[in-house]
Length: 323
Image (cartoon, helix red, strand yellow):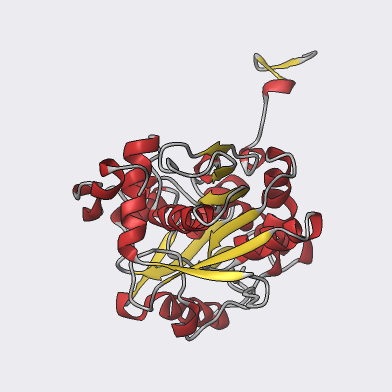
């Protein structure tokens, strides 16, 4: 057929897996009003991934690592605990590769997340919301232990391939997109894969890079996918407490407010953890006279639009310069 196959040039063809990563780095300009001219704040637009979140990177690397090791074989199902995004990433990539997916998640996950997972063919096991992700993790571990030959358990909280995905892809992208000028990296801790992988690579590329971890201000919060490490019974094995130069806390209300501000001032409809990241990054930026601060917009707002916090006015950011 020459250079064409079914009317499409080979150069124009791409698989879904090739769409993972290579996301844009956006400069935030309106929520940062009032910062010194030499301070710049950027954020990675991770909803560009095919599954709609930063978790596509980790899911792809964990699945491929499972295949290489022989732990994941044709006919097996991928099974893990998730607050939503990693499950959607598994389901997206699993569908493309021919694997079934089973996920355990707290029953209070947004309706949009549940609908997306079911639309992609995933099996959902809903657990008591009062026990959070810890119960979802225990539930999936019990399931896998009962039928180890049927399930591949990536174990996103402890799988080195999770952090390696960000070491190999996210960090080099940030380095290239900032021309090596990044001075601060700010990211919330969930599995801690993003913070750990990016942080270790940036520290190698530029030892003076400041690494700032972000956590909720206490165990009772509504920032999905983010952990308050001191109160969790199951601390992720990927978590490296010594890696961060400092840890900032963000309240649920601060995350909500910044999420609204990003929509109404920047035109960026993002999720709550993205709002938390930017709120913390802006705190860092306000301390500087010069610097390039980078954070992560983990996902879009598509899976959170039923949340009532959108109904409140973004009073602080609309009233003055930034929030």
